[in-house]
Amino acid sequence: MEFDEKEQFLHRVLFGGLTNRNAGFDSSTIPHVSPEDFEIVIDHCVQTGAGICGIEIFDVTRWERDGQVDFCGVWFPPKGDLEWARALARQYAGQPSITVCASFYTPEEMATHKADPQWREQLIDLEDALGGGIRKHAGTSAQDQGDERPDD
Image (tube, rainbow, N blue to C red):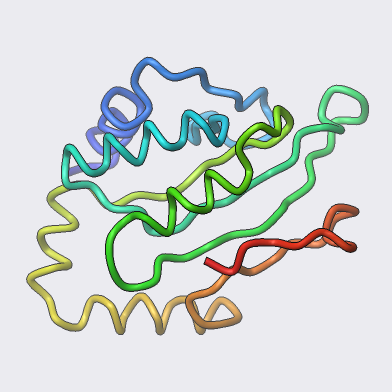
């Protein structure tokens, strides 16, 4: 699947019918949704066979006031199904200033990865190169002081 096809899959299939909350604070090609809508995205992943590479969460409270967003963290998948993503979305549910975005594997990419026994180790190597194992990497923001964050 080429980039344009992958972007169309992302916007039409995984995020289709949901409200994009990206008001210009991220690339226009990256949809952001509420934690509640992200659970629908997860359902779409399950239905289509797509996978989640990682999730980023932002607090957009300051966006309208001073054009800034707070990065809450990035989470990478542990082994297993998508329940880790669903649990993460639920921990942020009910917070209207939170947006969620993610990077995805298309169903074709997931099939390729599952056929390659090394794909999990390659993901771990990539995440180690980015600064740590497959765990949450917290950003620095005012929210990081004192708030507990999910560990996966």
